[in-house]
Image (cartoon, rainbow, N blue to C red; front, side):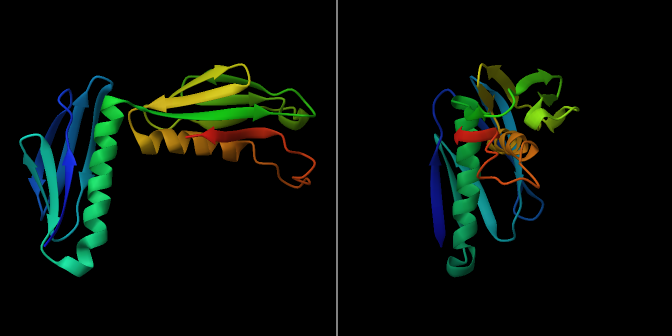
Length: 176
């Protein structure tokens, strides 16, 4: 039997529902908010014990990677509601000054490489985007939503059909 134990801090409340057949729904509540995730894989077990969560499987060899993956997802849930996640991106330009602003669930990038029409990047889920000078900060309780939003911003300003050694303009992830 292979197992992994995830410690739960005092200020975080974790609730586990379901079973190994229908899948588990793990919900975490903490100072930053609430987040939940569905985890399902044949032969995997998740049990809450006092101040920890035990993830285990009875088959040693085949399910060892899944035990660690489930534990990492649960750990990210706990870290997200306790501390939150933050990605920092840098706005770089050498040819035309880029103007970045947030409108609802989109980030509008204007004057990228002198283009007439603005580029739009989607904000995934509940992630929050702030623009401070030449820095964009993406924060939230879900690691995947924050990472996807940062990746969307980087991909939206990808330079195409030009020499990337000369045209290094764009929004790039510098910390995450």
